[in-house]
Structure formats: C-alpha cells, structure tokens
Length: 393
Image 1: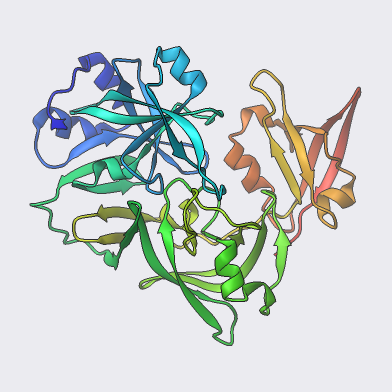
Image 2: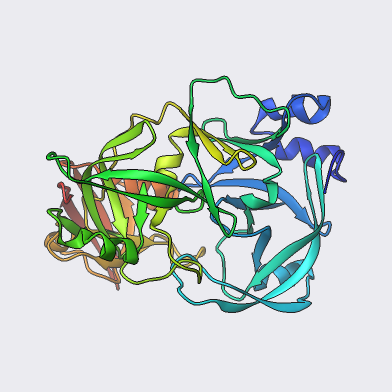
C-alpha cells in the first residue's frame, strides 16, 4: 500500500470532502493524520468514498466486524463495474452459522490520499443494499479514528501516535481480525451481573448490544428475572439496569438477542457491541497496542430507546410510495389500533414518510405517551388511524 497523491481529480476530492471542511487541510497540506471524508447513514453507520479499479466513487460502509483484509460488493455492482471473479472463496454474514461460497478477485482501491494495490474483493451473490463494505482491518497499520459528530475518519501514524484527550483506553483482543472488548451487563437493581467479550462492530446497526444465542444459553440469561419482548426487527429485546464498557455505562439499556446460533460462520463470540453504543464516542482503534480509546461525545447521555408502536416497516422498492408494514407485533398499540401486515404507511402526523428519513420514522414511533396519526393505504382504501404509543419495554 502507498500513502500519497492517489489518482483522484481535484474536483473529485473536493466533491467528496464537501461535507467535511476539516479534511481539506490534511489532504492538501500533508500534515497530521490523513483525514478521509465520511458520511453517516440513517442508522449511524460510517461510509467512506473509494474507487475500485478506477471506477466512479463508491460510498462504502466501514465495518470493524468485517473480518479479514477484505472489501465487499454485490454481484449486481460487480457487473456494473465490469469486474469478473477469478476464484471462489467462502464467507458468511453475521447471523449465518455456516460459511457459504462467494466469488473473489484482486483489485486496486483508491481513497483520497491513499492507494492500495492487490486488495481482496469479495463479490457477494445477494444484494448488500449499499455500494459496498470495507473492513476496518484493512487499515490496522494505522490508528483509526472514527468521529461520528463531524463525521470523519482519520488515519494516524501508529509509530508517532500519542493520545492525550479525555477518553479512556479499553483493552482489545482479536479473533479473525475482529476486535473484542469486555463488557458488563448489570441485569437489575439488585446488582445481578454477567460479563462477556463482544465484537466491537461498527456495522451492527440499531442496537447497543446484540447477544449471541450461545452466550444467552451459557449464562441462562433467558431464565433470569428479565422481561423479554419482541422487537420490530424480529429479535427479542430486554431492558437491563446498566450496560458498561470500561468506565462508560448506559443506564436502562436495551439489549437484543439472536434466536439461533451463527456469527460469520465461525465460533460464536458472546455478541456484538453495536452502533447505538459506539456512536456516543469518538473512537480510536489502536490495533498495534491492542486497545480501543473511547472518548464520549455529545450523544453519550442520550437514553436507550425502544419501539413504542409494535410496527415493523420497510421500503419495499424505491419507486413505491410509502413504507410497507412487514410486521405488527401482537398486543401492541399498532395491533390494537387495527394496523395490519401488508398495509402501506403513507404518512405520520400528516407528513409523508417519503419525506422523512427512516431513522426519524423509527424515532417518531418511540415517543411513549404520544398519539400519532397514521395515514394507511389498504388496497383501494386510504385510512386515518390514531395510534397511542406506550412503553413496551
């Protein structure tokens, strides 16, 4: 790999950096860390711009749980880029317990100020729903800083890196290049607690913590004095008294568990520390010193929230209006109000959902005690349904 002036046009670099003014000084002056422009999606996952074999700019999710020095795109994107598989490999998604065949090739990857040759590209047969994914392990020769507030990604020279901020270091261990950190779960006010080692996963959206089924079984967590409720993702969730990593704790934390074994086709870790925890910090992944530095940001004190509606909605197709109701959890406000699976949610409080980011739709359905007005399309009918939200967990 080579740091230097990658073959990006000045216009492309400026366009990629447009939303990150601080990045320009580092890229052009060559001083301090190399700052990569970044974007956050609706689920607070960080993406960075790159080009594969001279392609147009792709915004790829940066995944610390990606495993190995890998880049990922799907088959449809590979065809669009004119990329062809050279051999067969094996990989698996997070919830998959078995490895599955995939296609592989080697490519050149260019980022602003960084040129990487002979990089392993995995071509997944199923859609990723994004331009691509890049494993954070590709950058483990640097100290990688993730700034969720700016947002930005900064690569610090590992030899000269000295941290003197207000954050605290958390020891890391590694399994297949995935970083693991110890965390504590205080289950109730009586102090019943358990500990585990969890993958620090910047790709694990929508939860503070995901627990593997093997961890739940080993600790008999399902038999303890916790209230488990179905969530809008098809998992089971519980609210515990406290979730803590090192000195940092989230009170009344919502955690989720997987119902069946599976973690990237490998032996299961205890689970994954997700983006809902990580976005509350400026992160420094220091692979060489086997540590993660957590520096709290403005989001640190935000409460851990849970759905108050019982609705699971998704965008069925880009051309379709509204959000399709995929799931209505029994015994929740949505089921009691008469919302049905297969309905199409057109608007909330007279605002079209097509004009609202998906994360904001989810937030509007978490406001306990608030009454929302839903505009629902059901076949030829358009219905107005009042929905009184209430605490479900």
